[in-house]
Length: 356
Image: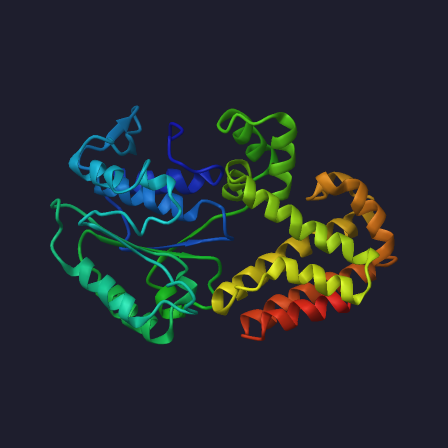
């Protein structure tokens, strides 16, 4: 099949599969887009929805690969709802389209509520505005409450013709097996560094040095690399998280806690606080893993090559030998589990900083 112009870097097997499903009229009633964050799952789900809803799909070549026309009333409804194409937005909740419905966990809520799911189900049960498909996307579907999962299950058990539901999830552990069994699971995998490197140079027009740096620190996640390129404050924030962890080796306990306070800030609370703490620990894990790799002489594999000199210096400060770095990495992973179990994020981070 001809390479499709769908907005996804890597994971082309999924693009080919979804396009063939549309061409052959074998679209499933429910999918789970599964994989780590920042692989483009939501972006692709939006584009898949737009393609299904398009009234004048464009056929590419003899294989009849499919893309949306961009000109029909349905495509215009996507375009006019947001500044720029809807499928370029990770959050498509603002799209005003009668046959497209998007929900995600509300700010500072732990789960997607049953009220959200009930409205979602009702919207999908109405007749199609454009006389074709109706598509619903549930972002963070692994955060469904028990009640909302049970309500959704009833809809999945009795699928309606030309109604497609896409669940976007990082893992399957929190999704009931009864829901999983009624969905087609599409696995998204981290993308090779050289593919992201080429993408950043060719599509984002960055320098080779920046492309090398961002393609490494994103750890196979193209959407994260794009964020680094397009949002200077986001990249600056990443560097600050990494630098504070690196500085712990030269600091006493009071200085470490002071650095922690700068990262957390005075206004973080609730689920926002927990998400911030998880992101901090993810960055710290990357730095600790780099130290372990350096200890094994695997310089080409380190993620944060931009900190190479400081990593080499601090490696001696944090401990001697692989066992010490493995201990640090395991403690950081435990910290993430504690936060997900609703332990106070500040206490978790402070405990880690003090006991490094």
